[in-house]
Image: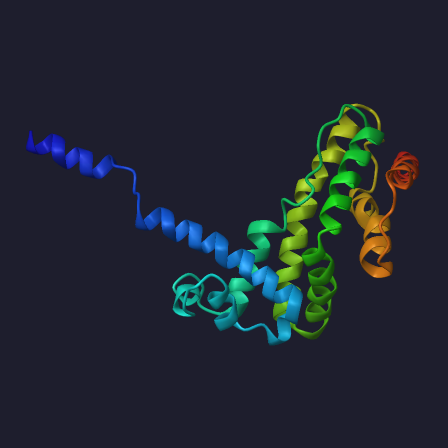
Length: 205
């Protein structure tokens, strides 16, 4: 009987504090992005981030040893899986699905403020450039699925320059929405998808 109780202790799923801790981490990420969007990363205060969720700064330092570690964890947790490519059955429909997902993401007011600041900080700081490069590499690795599916379906030549293709996919929307600040209509996104698909089909070497 004693052994059964011991086994139960070993296999019992943690609850209470562990669940609250995960919930607090999620709240801290959200507060971090809100603070970043409002003030910019250079003057971002971890005390203000913690205060947004009714916690002390120690709640952050128990999870992350530094501000940069917090930045990297937040970006890696949320960045790579934004607007993931979906399998829609064909190249142009896959590209359109990706672009519509990206359009929805780039319309978010926090993201539209954070992205330019992220790239500005990456230009000033080697540490931030390294973080940004790691997050971008993770996103590109996930994006390869769209290209690989198209090659497997013979929608694209096997010789396609995958790195150039991955540059091309988000470039037009990013330029229009983040750099210029204009949101394309759905009809415009459809035109962009057709144009990109045609360019990709001609991208074999």
